[in-house]
Image 1 (spheres, one colour):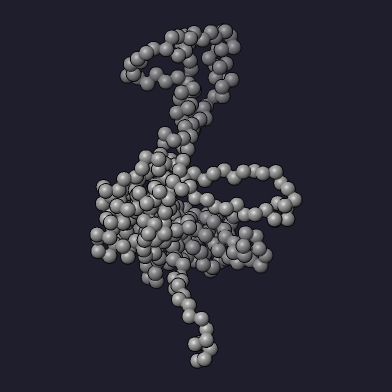
Image 2: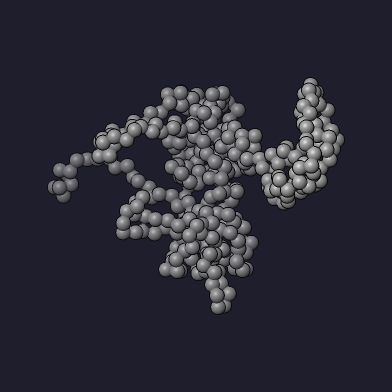
Length: 120
Length: 227
């Protein structure tokens, strides 16, 4: 079109997507017995981890719950940090403890399980 | 050294730096309140033969068990996979996802890595082991000579000057401090990178590999990946 030819020819540097250096995970809920839950520890299902044996890689790895807020603090994106603390059961679920307990609104929310501290 | 002719009752360690009896209580147990203790200073021996039994005195034992982890004498032991010349993936920080070459471990325990700068924009930099994945790929860095003055001091961030707060500061008129890079770092970068660039270019595909960023893709899970 005419507008295309009139526009200045610029060579755009293709910006690649920022690399994903974390595993996606879901916040299943708190550690609990049938009747009582313990909010200090959360249960986390990490994508692709279906076995207790697979969870050993993730021990100690930092976990982040990343969320957006209306008001700016250090930016509008906020984060609650925690770490993977133990495996939970036989199917690859993992326990995580956060600096501040994750609020119950986050059940089902995506968490990021980082690849550090690395032991590889 | 000091000698003490008195015998002492045992004061076992419960935990790091914590003993069963506090200092005062222990002194009472040992009868220090009854006798006046005179500490005889002996002339320091030129060569002390190490005794078979570890005759460590009280204060030394406390020091042993409360050794500060940050003291320079204790460096982070390197993982077996961290071999000089290995290609590492930076997992966090400004250059996350970048593949870099591991040069050596500095005195502080941090790893010295370089891009090389030409290939991926990562300069000579310090990195903590915990934020690094070691791959099985490595480069021969025997031709690389890291100058002696490349140490922690070279990379240490200068302390921010605490200037007196003025009105200009309050209104934000203060001009932003220019970031100056120590020119020595640029020199050293060239010295270190030159042979490295040659070594990498000699290996097919390695140059492109160093320039590429690592990212987890769909269906890739770190526990299943073999680095």
